[in-house]
Amino acid sequence: MTQRTPIIGGNWKMNTDLESGMSLASCVVDGVENCDSCEVVVYPPFPFLQAVESVVDASKVHLGAQNMWHEESGAFTGEISGAMLKDVGVSSVLIGHSERRHVLGESDALIAQKVDLGIKQGLQVVLCVGETLKEREAGDTLAVVLLQLKTGLSNVSRDQMASIVIAYEPVWAIGTGKTATPDDAQSVHASIRSTIVDLYDDNIAQQTRIQYGGSVKPDNATDLFSCEDIDGALVGGASLSADSFTAIVLAACDS
Ligand code: PGA
Image (cartoon, rainbow, N blue to C red):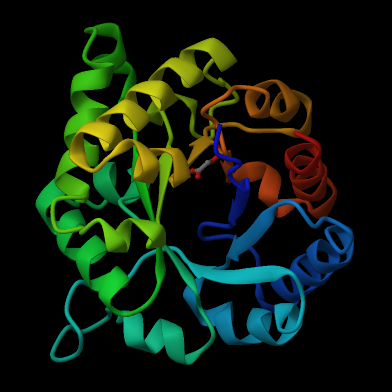
């Protein structure tokens, strides 16, 4: 079996201020200092990227952004390009997070364009997919998730798959305290991986990291990470506490 390096992302969403964001980043840097077998990324709000970069620079912690626009530059008031993100030291970007899909109305087609440009601009792209509670209860989980996956990857070549991470985040588990059981999550992750086999090949599928997201905490992380197809986590609420986030990173390192 391919050994995949787990990846733990801390999605701060629209939280922290300049001072608390820098202090959180600094505590994360210290907390994960001895963790060699896991990739760690923090995703602060846009205005704090440069300040957080100065804290994580020269550490093991990578800098990520929560979103980007799908055009290179131009008259797009209020938007931020991949090149701007690169300029301030960002190496990873979240695309299609459920809050962007369901609160801001981003479509699969728009998300595919963002994925395409993010990769072309040299960013690691974390493509987020996940079903709502209504969709799960209607038995549509796989139909929804796999359509989001296929559309999101529609412009991605075999070579470009090395820049892709998938985050499976059931919408009903995000910020609610409800986590998918490890078995439920594993079964969706396995379906995502086998769809990547169909779209590309087994080798690419075995190398692609698939994170789980949705109320991941120190006390459920170990069970999730013990699942064969779960390669880390995208963490929201628990990433705002350096102790909780570090504990999740250490659980991934030990997995
Ligand atoms: P949560 O958020 O850990 O607070 O559920 C996860 C996410 O939205 O990425």
